[in-house]
Length: 395
Image (cartoon, rainbow, N blue to C red):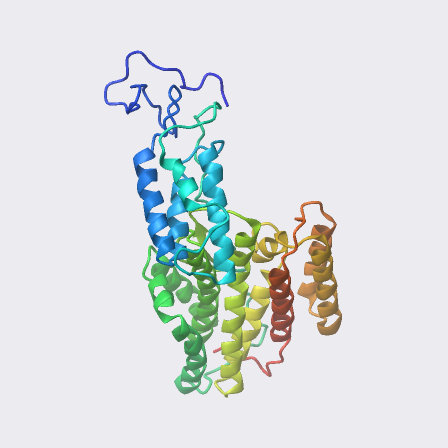
């Protein structure tokens, strides 16, 4: 912290500037606590959020409780005891979400009543209160990789037309209807719908409307998988946005509190994307036309690419929750999948996973559900990525 920062108390407050309700000290922009008397600047708002969180918890709405506590966390100095208490409460509620618990009045790791001391008004510690709020806004979850162009010769004349396309869309509809309300609302927020239409126009011009619609639906389901789990954990996020030629992404407005949360948010995308690829493949098997086989194969490849255990990709988030022995098991699984399938992308995954397994950032605690999810997705997506699609016409 810069010693010359505007922490000193002004004896003559600037006209119109906010002042501390207790001691009258002028409060510079960005302060979360009064530098003189340590009173929390947002104490009234914190009281309201604590009451809202407690009410939601007793009603069994853990997502709403988490949403309120995360909002409170953003208003607390990171070095304060209240911040620590609220963070522990969030972690306790998060564990309940993972376990599927939503019983009214269920206990947490840290009692919300003790965390409600965040609204008590004063900071008990003597460290500086001028701490900028953590920037919650600019971290993409994971951008779905751009679709590759179909193989040379894939463009043909008219296929069997609208009837075949309708059959393929029907398979995707089975998936979409299961989460219909959330999926439909996703396209109505912000510029999501417009970005979808822009990408649709680009892909239609290049490869035909059926391929464009199918691959964008696959990308959309992938991103809504992230959105659904973010909502479950009470983490604010944007609607999916599409970038022609680059895929799609969702931006978090708040950060996950633990590696476990981040891992589950990350792998929710490939899980939903795998379901979309299966739906397209079922349409292909039902005779809807080879285009749906191409969509299934390409969708699986995109989601397999997202399993790369690197920083911003979904696999990097999932890998971060695995301990050292689990990472080496994942390396073995990737190597076995590559040896069996000979899919070249898996060699890249293997090399990156080797580097992560040899690193020193692994947690001590194992995460068995995450290992099972990662290896299961690896096997399923590899099987779909290597399916044979005779002719593979797109138009």
